[in-house]
Every structure is written in C-alpha cells, then in structure tokens.
Length: 493
Picture 1 (cartoon, rainbow, N blue to C red):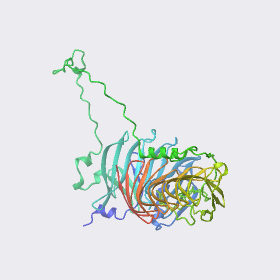
Picture 2: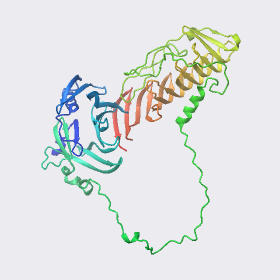
Picture 3: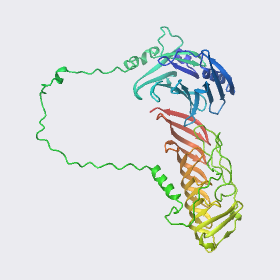
Picture 4: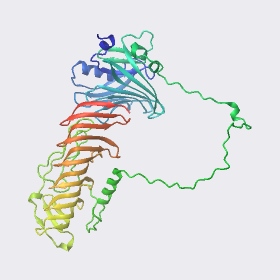
C-alpha cells in the first residue's frame, strides 16, 4: 500500500529548498526557483533572458541561460556587484552561489548535469568558508526525505532526517521545498513511527558540561595517589626532523624544470644552442572548445598530418577537440650541415628551418637522443628519435616554450605512459596514451596539483567508470559511454 508520504514525493523534482534556521520559508523572491520551474514544466524547453528584476523593492540585473545538457549560466548583480553567480564543479556538477553585501558567500546550491538538485549548503555570513549546514535528498522506503547535517568549526556535530508533509500544523517545519508536486514541508517530527528514535528526535547535539571540583584548585590540595617524580630519568634527545614528503607531482615538476633548462637537455648533455624566450602563438593540442578556447595555430614542431583528435570530457561535460595541425615534415628535406657545428641536421618546413642537435644515422635522419629547435630558437622536442621520428621518451613543447607532453612516443605519436598539459586551464592528464589520445585509466589534476578525477578512457573519451572529488571532499562515482555521463552516485565524506 502506498503511503501518503510516498504519494507526496513520487517523481518529485526539487525547484528550491529553504531551511528555516538560515532564511525565510518563502520563494516569492527566488528567481532561480521560478526559472527552474518553467524549465521542467515546459519539458526542458530552453530558458534565457537578460533583464532587470525587483526583489523587495530593490532593482537587480539578471542574465541567464538554461537548456538541456548544458550547465546553467546564471548571473544576478546589484549595483554592478555580485548577488548570485554560477561556478562549475567536477563531475558535471555546477553550483549557484549567493553573496552578502560584503561579497561573502552565505549559500550554495548544487545541481547535476541534468539540472537536478544535489544539495544546499549554508555558511556563516561573517566568516568566509565557515559552513553551518548541509541538506540533501535521501530516499527512504520510496519516500524522498532530506538529510540535514549541522557543523561547528567546519566539523559535523549532528544530523537528522527530515520527512515530508503537505501541512505544517504548528509552524515547526525545519525546511520548505518548492517542487513539481507543490510546496512541501519537511521536519523530523513528520517521521513515520518506525523511524522515530532518540537520535532523530534529539537532532541537536547537547554540549557536555564541565565538571569542576573547586577544592582541586586550592594551593594546599594534595592528591590521594601522588606520582613520585624523583626516580624518573630524562630520555636522550633522539628526535630527528622529519624529511618533507616528496609527492609524485613534485617529481614530475622537477623533471620538467630540468628538461626546460636552455643549456642542458633532459639527459644531462650540454648543448650549444640558446633557448630564447619568444611569445609566439601556440597550438594547444589538448585545448578545449569551451568559452576560453585558444586559437588554432601551427605547432612548435612537426606534428603528423591528420593527427587524431584528443578529446577529454571535463566537469561541465562539454566536447573537447584538439587542434588539427598540418606539417611539412614528411616532405621535409633533412640536410646534414657542418655550419660552425651549431646543429647536426636541419628540418626544412614551410614555416621555417628546425635545427637539430643530437645523433643522426648514416642517412642523416635523427636517430637517438637529441633536441630540435623551432625557427624562433625555442626547444620544440627534447628526447629520443628513430629514423627521423619521435620514438621513445621525450618532452614536447608548445610554440611559446611551455610543456605540452612528457612521456613515451611511437612514430611521432604520444603512445605509452605520459603526462599531457593543457595551457587553457593549467590542468594535466597522467596516464596511458594511444594515437595521441588518453587511453585506459588516467588521472587529471588542476594547475595547483589538486586531484580532479580518475577515469577510464577510450579514443580520448571517458568510457567506463570515473571517480571525482569536489571541494568539500565528497566523492562522485559516475559511469560514462563515449564521453557522455549516463549515471552518477554521490558519497558524502
């Protein structure tokens, strides 16, 4: 038999949630809730506008776009200062942030790639980042309840489960939900009898009282069993300062710094050319086609014709395409030269002559260890060659001198273990590569070395399981098919 609470929350979609401890249980000024209601009630028809709105007789500027399979674009300003904005998170999640007059974030609402509500967090308005409460949906016996967690000093102190009701008889509700099923009240007192317990009814943690005995603070107080300190001996000082932990990221960074020194190559061999710092346009073969897409220009060194695209679905689930770059290397004439012994060979291309310093075979082809310089004097590739092609371990650079890729190569293509760097956002991908694209399991980190996600890749696209981590330490386990997320499960930490 279906209970009233099961019927009340059947196929429910949360438009917005308010918690009574932190805001009024009222949605009349909640513009986002109205836009979300229009979007779901119209069966996902795109919503967009750029207009002025009045909230409590105060004028705000509102600009938004909401459509299927695209992250929400949302911006509300008051006197040119932020009032509400959107931030993209990992795992396809995005977050709507609410600001005080002092630009402190006091509320965050999280939604997934399908615009479904994930959770809401409240923060102290006077202390930046001081979390006070988190509420999120929780399904219990086919009833959509709400899990409420309270914090003190950013540490969990209590939790309770709120159950739904279509009435608020004594105005005691902890939360109010605006949904496709109407306004629904939530409180722990609405729990069915089988769920009511001491833990649920006494949701707020009680503070422990200090038991102080005044006589123990008297100057002449003597304990019953005093400890005899006369026979104690001092221990020798055997403490040694612990060595700082060196992470894998630190090792990679040191390798890259060494590889990019202008007077020494990756293998420690002294070279005679000068690495001039030139700010040429770069071709980011790992760049995304997002709002900040970098220009598609010629690469620093010879990239194979019809290079396969390097695609990688990121937190916003957008399609990423690598820059397709042509080359003249296959038609280039390799010329051995003795000109002042500055280079061992020259690679002539349409964009200029690339100088090579290193081993060559009897045919003048680059074979063994060496360095190739761009016409502007920037190191293009530093590593191993075989018959004129990048083959083995090596470091490839963008045209401006930034690291593009460090790892294994096979016949001019990234193949094997390696690290790819994207200059558009500073992220890096560590894992296995095939045909210039990520393959099998690989991990991504941001420009600060912070973990983003680890996923299974096929032909450069996420394909299989993916584990990501948000800024609050919550794990997201998702399943992908050909770069498209098909399911996701959240584990709160």
